[in-house]
Image (tube, rainbow, N blue to C red):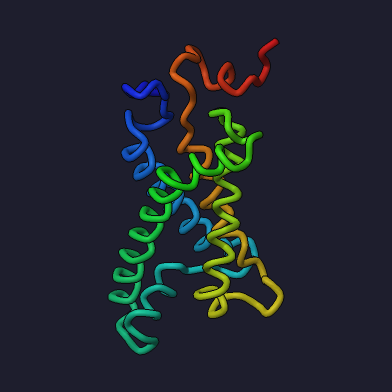
Length: 174
């Protein structure tokens, strides 16, 4: 963990912004890869890059161009939503939901999952109808994988807490 000048330690990076961008990129990548690998375990495959490419270029565009353009859009939006989470949503959840105010890994995880659920609702309303069955059909998985990884990676803790992640979370501490 790296400590910033603000009295907060980040798992990645020295500032909320840098930590948010890196955590959002990794969370987007993990969710993207999981969606592509679902077909290997007999789940519906979610190719977010192709979906975004089809939305912009149409169904008849070159598949390689569709995948690349869609990937750029998908990763850019994943990073933007991650920065929104880190700079606006994460602190706001701590203010409005008092049990989530403490900067602990568990609370960060819960905040990430909540944000993943919000993104699932947003994407279900606008984009996911092109991919999912009438009754969810597994569409919640991609945004939840994103939210879980974002919450785990964007993990600020008070700088006064010296020591390991376990000590900061209270896990195994007596």
